[in-house]
Length: 397
Image 1: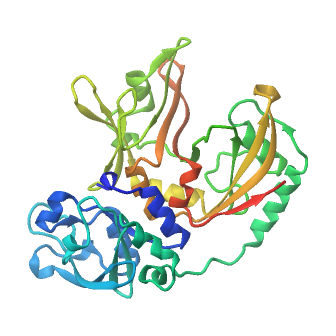
Image 2: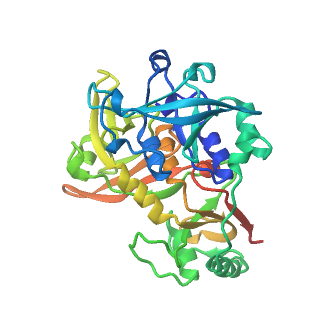
Image 3: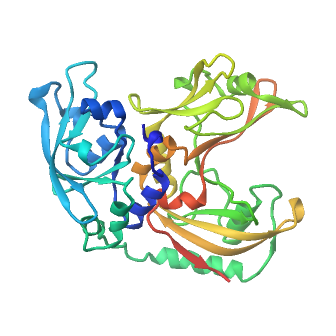
């Protein structure tokens, strides 16, 4: 339901990340507001567990098992006390629910609400109110007080790697050591003495290194990680079935090179869907002629969250000026943006909101065989602040 938010998910998460604040996100619907019901989404449930507030999995169904917590509506200049009800109804499967007393006086349908847990109480922030969200910058306000946090200490490995990249930068333009898209990263890693490998672990003493080209007038999306779908959970069954069913022919070979997100179908009808009940990310196919939607591939969300954490405990996003092309391309590495542990809880919301997308890069290798260039989870660098705490930018020239 986060995709129905009337305010920007990305900009909101950037604000909270700038203060290193973890939050849970909700969007009340018109029907939910009328019935005084909201689903406790998977990310909210995990947030409640992580903060020690509540575990729905240990809660019985029915009114006798309802849990109430102290809660506060956060205004720009004051707090308004209310009550949070956490429960699982007897009907259906007992889907986790929550409600805040007098919510209708604080929020309209489709407002974006952030939940912050402190001292066994829930603070509700209406992020659709610009004055409330802006108050985070003022420590004298309720939200500003909640936002106060300390930045982590400096890491000596960061300084060591930064000095190494500065030495590379001082050499100016350097010829690529491999033609093609991967040349920029392979060249940098070779110059840093990092051997090529297929490991999913970070590149240098716990720090992942990602290199990108700087081109005028175009901001390329950045790959966060690659993860193969779970073919056993995918109705399509295999990469070859996916390519042969939905691919197109070019130069005598089948190809499938497409970006897709969770907000609208792409040109061939591919669209992502969050299945909160199963904690899956699904890729569906929406037939434009019949309006029939078919489930095609599946990723388990817990594996995707783990990949994000595993890949980016710390990351150097290295930018380079470029000249030439192909085998004659040259790179001048001029900037490093250093990000730290991502807010994994925000990952689901960013997929649901269409901010993180997925690319298929597949081509036919031979009869019934696929050359897989990755199932890439990507986002625009301008949205980094919604996933990562405040980054540090280092100019190398």
